[in-house]
Every structure is written in C-alpha cells, then in structure tokens.
Length: 389
Image 1 (cartoon, rainbow, N blue to C red):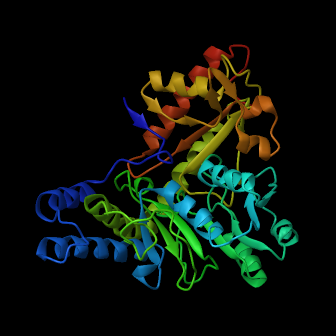
Image 2 (cartoon, helix red, strand yellow):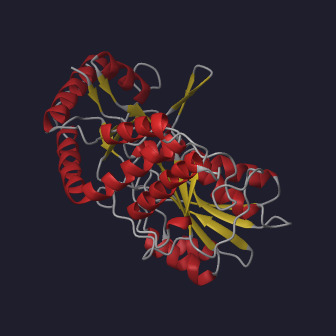
Image 3 (cartoon, rainbow, N blue to C red):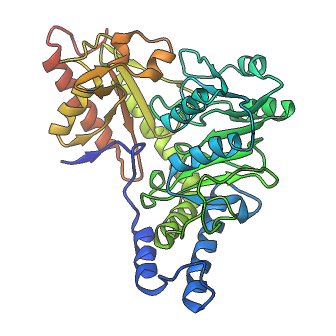
C-alpha cells in the first residue's frame, strides 16, 4: 500500500494540466514575444493562464498577475522588489514563522542595513494584531505575514493585519502558497498589496508561480532583460508550465466548495484518532487552520531514535509519505525554528511531524496511517501505553 500524505510539499500534477501542457509542447510552442503567428498563439496561451490564475484569487485585472518560476521567486520579487525602490535602508516587518523564502531574503536585507522587526507569535502560531500595530514605524516600507503556515497549519488574521498596515500607509504582502486553492481568497476584499502563489501546491506543474501585484503598486524587477511580465520578470515565459498552472488554478477554484469541507472532515478525523496516542501533541491553531493540514509533535523527542525525522523514515518504510519539521544539517538534527518560535521546548521541536491531505486522500488512508504510526511509536517507546485514559 502506498499512501501519500505530504501535499503541502508538492501535489501530483493533475491530468487536465498534463494534457494542456502536451498540446502546448507539440502545437503552440512559439515565443510569446514574437509577432508572428507562432508567437501570438503562445502569447494567447499565457494570457489565458493569467486570466485563470487571477480568477483563483478574484483579482480584478489579469494584468495584476506576474508569472514567476515558483513561490520562492514570487516571495523574493515582493520583498526585494519593494526594497530596491529605496536608495537608503528602511524598516520591514515579518512574523517569526515565515517560510525561508521570506525569512532568508529579509536576513539579506538586514545585512544591507535594513531594520527588521520579527513579530512573535503565540503557542498557536498566530500574530497578535496589536503587536503589529505597535511595531509600525514612520519608515516601515513593507509588512509580510504568511497566510497559512506550512509546518503547523495556522491561518493568520490576514484581513485584520492588512487593514492595520493599510491605515498606516505601508505595503502589505502575504505568502499564500499554502492557502491558495485550499481557502477562498478574494484580493478585491482583502487589504493586501502583494500575494504569492505556487503552481505545484494546487496540482499544477512544478516550476511556475505568480505574484499578485495590486494595480498602482510599484516594484523594481529583479531580472534585467526583455521586460516580459509587465516589465517585472524578464525572460521568455515557460508557456507549457504556465498553461498547466492556469488549468490547475481554474479547476481548484471550481472545486473549493466541495473540497474544503471534505478535507476538513478528513483532517478532524485524523486529529481525533491521533489524540488517542500519548506523547503526541497537536500543534497550530485548531480553529483557524488550513483545511488539509494535520501537525503534531513528540513531547519527549530525543533527536535520535525518537524524532520527527525518525517517524518519517519509519512510515516511509511502510509506504506512507509524511514530513517532519526539524532540519538536518551536516548530520546533526536541529529543532524546528517554527516550533521554537511558538514556545515549544527544544525536545518537542525535534519531534514535529506534518500530515497533509489532498484530492486522493480517503478515510481508509487516515485510518491506516494512524494505525501504522501507533505501531511505530509502540516499537520506539514500548514503555508507553498507546491508549490515553
């Protein structure tokens, strides 16, 4: 039995996206910047995908969608695209639970003299809007807060946070890579200026992403060249991949009404069964949470036999794919910085695991996975009873 439960890492490319990509590769393979028929056919494909991706987040104009190579580049374009507008360093605010595409980019800005405020979070991983309000300064150029945290599933109060930033007069960016296609997002209602997306998180191909740029917001391109993508992302567009992204975005938008409640039911089923296992602690916000996301941590991980990584390896041997939060550098296991930021002990932060659900996940997959996880933990910790009293 093979059970894939790592949909936050990547999703299988859906057949509809593969079909359109095959058509583009064999019939509409021109350069979108060319003026002849071959080029114009390709340009039409790109613009159709732009409309489809805009529809996923209800963007008013397709031209507000800038295609990139993925979510990481979209995040970098948002952060550095704003920063490069300034001749002298300013102030930027992020949360302490950002994806590394944000946190590492901001670390670079800090080396260049920018002032950085990293907002703390509570034990659920949520930013307090009052903390954001207090952190804003006269020279705050940008605030970036992740929409849905990839490791613990917590959904931030983006509407409230964005309103605070908007009233202050700074720009607001959110990394919505984990949230898009899993939650309803309406950028005409949300006070966001910049929003990052990724194709391969919504059953599109790897290698494509997008940055939503609210009309009127200025950015400086990171790449010099032919001025494609409204001058914000030079380079010949990857037409087949962008086309696959567009199809995946359109279908994700159509399926939200049925997929969200189905995933929530499966997610809650998993949490209910995992609650019977002692030594496992649920992480993240139980209410404001991504619908497909289950995360726990081992209360007494030792970083060796008993750790999140060890559980991943053991479940992989059983044909089940999940992920862990801790990172391994040069053979040494490091605790999850996200769990540490949320106030967990170093031991617990070595034991984070993430189970993320998708279109193909069934109740049987959940039940089998929990049963296997119980068996693994019984083998690793035989002194513990596996049923809570």
